Length: 260
Image (cartoon, rainbow, N blue to C red):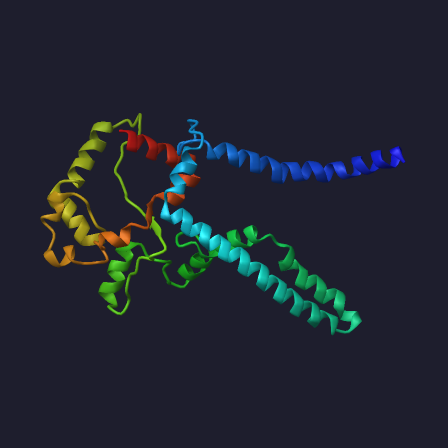
């Protein structure tokens, strides 16, 4: 009896190791990352959780997750019952094939399905938008794209979702150790000269924060809600959240930028 138990243990050991590698280790490592700062270099304990618990966006996500969990269980049970009834009434010779096809999406974890849909429809880098681009159809627009689209086709409007989103900003920088740093700074100073910066804004249609440039822009542009939306609509947005929270290099840059 003891020998059978030992054999069974060693036969199950590869599966146990696989579960530990793919489930336990990522879970423990995720807890470790949750206790680090944005640059993932300093231990902050429960500071990240205290920050999250004070954010309306976090509680909105919790609410949506609960709604998803409840509705997913209900619909899975309902669809499963319908599918089982459907397969039961299929002739025995074809039941195996249909059972296999129906089980494939059933055994895929919801998290993997979500990531797959995200990869397909991501606004900037998705496969779906890549295919549309082959036919001359641009992906979901940033502000400057929306400004040009609305100018060409006034029926096209630009809307900031009340649920939230990402707000982005571009910066000029000279890399450390650049061989011609003085030339780099001279170019940046030239581009940021109010008159030159004004011409750039007029061309690309993206907003600017420099008051000297704002004073030079046409009044109708300053009233444009695509370029300069109401402050209330910007509150749910996160600054560089997607890239900052998933890319350690960008997270470190942002941390140093804020600490400067």
